[in-house]
Image (cartoon, rainbow, N blue to C red):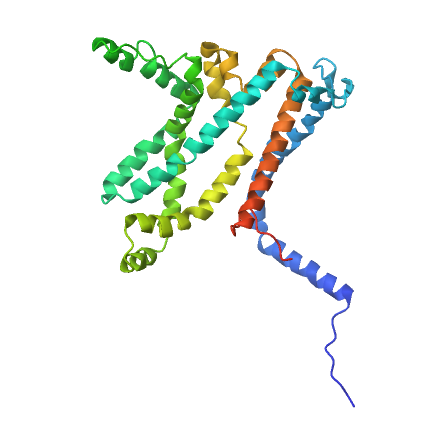
Length: 324
């Protein structure tokens, strides 16, 4: 009795077929790969090679000795994380407060702006408002801080108007008690319009038939927003929130440094300015590198944790999990 069996190719033949397939793909995509080479080179040069400098966190680095000859200190530089330096504790506390304000306000306001703008009937008015809102994104922090100082300073139009009407004055610029709120307001004015564009793009992808079906079922504007619009935005919101958490402890180095002298270190010191003041200004390179390294590791943990939480709620997040 003869039985026909399907024979699998030997392992050597399978490996040869895979190599041939890779060669074919490389030949097919060679132009795209050549175009991508400059971007890959820039990424390696300015993002990955500098990671080797984190070895400074484990050394008593002295510029005149160089990286190779500076003595090793092990984890001695990381002892600052135990609260030995009160200024570090202050910087950490200020960073966390500003981070919560920016995630709670700066991240959510663009969603509301996108919803309001999407509901406008006039396309010309919508484009005008959108242009006005995202133009501040292209201004440098030097200009943004100068504008706020001119508008809210003691001789600015706001306080001039209040004095003319015997209403007193509002001390905003240079006031340490409201500095964190001022910084958050500056970021909101500068970046809300730019972030709004991403949510507007996501809104344009929602199927209009879903709104029509909801209207037929008797759903009003609020219920359509809750059951159609927000679920349609959920994937984008989760993705952008994960990306924001990866950079959560970076709350504005240049912006805060420009205003630090006016309000004092206690009110304005954050982790980024702490690294600059202790590393570049005071020469504590090892301690500053240790703080920067821990800051980066915390960002990685936040991204991975938020991505795993997104998977738990059925969202793809930054990457899809492979099959079990």
